[in-house]
Image (cartoon, rainbow over all chains, first blue to last red; front, side):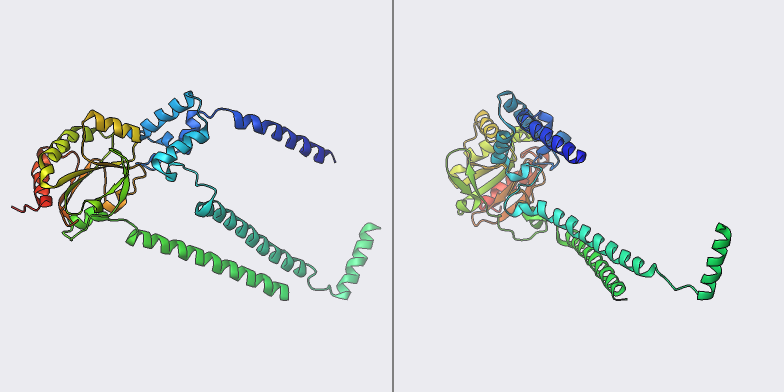
Length: 149
Length: 194
């Protein structure tokens, strides 16, 4: 019950913090890590090519003008195409880039679970083992009684 | 006994799935190494093959509308890949403009392809260097692979039938090391093989 209350408090705290986080202005370095230089194909924060420098300048200018992260990304996509965004879009064919790794992880978890279940069943069945020889069992009982007594 | 057989079967299936996965990855790697690189028209031209100029249709920067190399059939075309942020592109812009002005009446067109650039930067560049020849915009770089462009600037020559002629010029045109190749390319495109 205490754990459930604690979980509820944590969820409420996260929900309360979420809108604040969403409203916080993005920093240039956040955006530079999410956008790709069209000539060198690395993220802007790792590139010093002329076009990457020009794009960084554009990002700073637009942020200073009050543009949102979404607006800046849309403007860059309009110039350089969707490949300028490092993260693939969550729609259409590109959705596969998100779903396939999740599917592979899920299939792997199911596979590992199935193998573990199979092994545990085998061990449970093997556990009783061979019954003891009645004569040996009687001697063991007698020894244990003598030891206890 | 039956659950032991079941567990064994699951284990065998998992092993087969893992082996198939590894084989598929290996196959992809071999395919990529053997056939995966896009050679582009430039490499075929360098091998002496007869190559048609790869088609494209892109938005114009010098005016409204679209233009592609196919729209210029019957003309000799100097196709120049450039960007406003490219330093040697600034050096060659006056040469290309002069070439266009000189051979325009003979049916030569310089077609600029502005690649991986901001539209407004490109228009500023065109104004600064007084470019009057047609320029199209390829912000995504969709022409780069098909043409085999390796850097900027790069220049190709297309004859009146749409075939690539002469040699690809890497770097600014009409500098000492490529002046002959540039003049020969223009002549071949115009149909003057002398």
